[in-house]
Every structure is written in structure tokens, then in C-alpha cells.
Image (tube, rainbow, N blue to C red; front, side, top):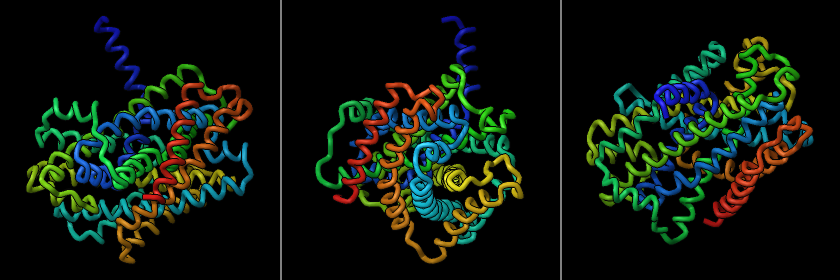
Length: 421
């Protein structure tokens, strides 16, 4: 292949990057970092394979969500309203809001502790600084500005890739454990798999992905739903590239977080950690100050990316359920209810940290709610994305639908497994 064709292909990929990258990166929020760190510390390299096994599952779900937004001209809740009664969509939206608020509390706590560990001051101060700062930025910045900021925040995830290289892995051994894993026995291993699935395939990402497609269309001047319907073949291919890169990057970061904690904490007999703070503290004497600094800094960066996603996805779902004006390109006075949901979720999340809510219990409850909600949302997503009327003849591909069916079955199994284990 000629250099000119390679350069042209690279330009195409870079131009296609957008909502898929920010959505994929938002999946590696502080709560996700904590989950992957726990798995690496407890099971070593045994679960490295899961980072690549879950990539096609996450990729197909996110692409289906993106296609719904691109083709219908509506967010996921709006498209669901075309298929299901308002009370069903409203129930999903309210449960999503509750789960996301608890997750925001856990993420703000992790970010605040990270700031304190970096010597920036007391953690309680940073809970409010981060929370209110994110609310202010969302209200005052227009969508294209906010999207640009979120895209650059995704770079923070490279901190975990660099950290893994600082611990000097034995790459042939890592490749062996990734491609030919030894399955750890016992209920704890199954519980870990449930946690990885629940963290990787989360309902808030479905709503955010579809919502961002609507925002992208509005940014191009297509303000009315009728003008946003249907998508060209090129637009769909571009989004496949975008989602493929974003979800691969997300799962690659998961791989390196598990690898880092496996080669440091697990190898030195530190098998039990409860928070990212525990992981960072234990990492410092084993991997050095640079690894500690990058791991901790990454928590702040991923939180700044994830919290707008968590609060925004809930705001999209609630607003579309009740036919409110919505969108991050709208002025506050034109979408008061939409922004109020966003601010309410973030402020309540911040307030929970002042009621001495255990961040691990918050994370557990968020995982439980999301674990129960996810398979039902996937069923609804499948029915919407397979309906020629709602999708204006551009239903999701057969391959995507088959993979999402498999993912739905796995998520139902994970939800049942969560209560068993």
C-alpha cells in the first residue's frame, strides 16, 4: 500500500473520531478503574482475556445505540417512546437516574481522594469543586466546545498504558496468559466476571451514545427531528470506525489496569483492595512514584470525562420521556428542566459524600441497579433497532443484532450471577 493511501486512510479515521471515542473513554471511570484494579489484585493476569472478549460485545451495543440516534433523529429514550408506553420508558429513565447519581457519588469520591493524594488539598473540598465545576462547564459551554474538551480528556487514559510499561512486564508471559488463560475457580471468580461485564456494558453509555448522535446532528444545523432522520452509508461507516476505535481503546485501558495491578499488587501478595486509593497507595512502594502519580492522575482525568456522561445520559433519558426541550447546545433558559436533572444528579452525588456514604457500598449499589437494568434496556434497544418503521428502513445489521442478542443473554446471566455470588 502506498504512503499516500495510508495517509488518506489515517485522515479518514481521525476525521471519523467523535462520540464513539468519548463514550468508550467514559466507560473507564474511577469506578471502573476500581473494579479492574480489584480484579487484577485478586486474580493476577487470569482475567486479561476479558478485556478483548468484551470488546466486540461493547462495540456492537454502542454501534446499535449510535445507529438509533443517527437514523431516528432522536435519543434512545425518544426512540423507545415510539415502541413502548411512556410509563415503561419513564421507569427505565428514573432507575437510570438513580444508578447514575450513586455512580457519580462514587466517582466524585475517587477523584477527590486522588486530588488529596496528589497534594492538592482536602478531599471534601474537591468533591464540590469537581461537582460544581462540571455543572458550570456543561451549562456555559456549547456542545462543540464541550465535545472537544471531553475528547481531549480521553487522553488521560494513556496514563494507565504508560503505568503498565513502568512495571516492566514479561511480554511473552503476558501474551500467554492473555491468549491461553487459566480460569480461576470458585464463586469469587464468577463474581469478578459479573463485575467486569457490568462495568464494561453499562446502560448510561447506551443513552449517552444515542444522545451524542443527536447533538452532532444539531451542531450541523439539523434542528428538527425530520431533518435528522436516516443516515448515509458514509456516515454509518464513519461511526463504525469511531465506535470501534473508542471501544477498543476503552478495553485496552482495562487490559493495562488489570495488568498493572496484577504485576504489582497480586505478585506481592496484596490480594485485597477496596478502592482506587488503596490501589494507588499500595502501588507506590512497588512501582515507584511515577506509576503512583500517573495512576492517581488518571482517576481525576477519567472522572472529569465520566461524570458529564453519567449526568448527561440521565438528563437525556428523563427529558425525552417527558418531552422536555433538551441538549447541551441549548441555552439554560431554553432547557431548564434538562439542565436541572443534570445538576440535580451531580449535586446529590456530591452531597452523598458528606453523609459518610461508603464509596464501595455506593459502587456496589450502582452495580446492582445497573446489572438489573442493563439486560432489560438491551432488549428494548434490540426491539427498537430491529423495527423497520422506527428505523426508517435502516435497521441494525444482522451481525450486530446477533452479537447484541448474545450480549443480552450474558447480561441476564450476569444479573442472576450477581445475586448468587
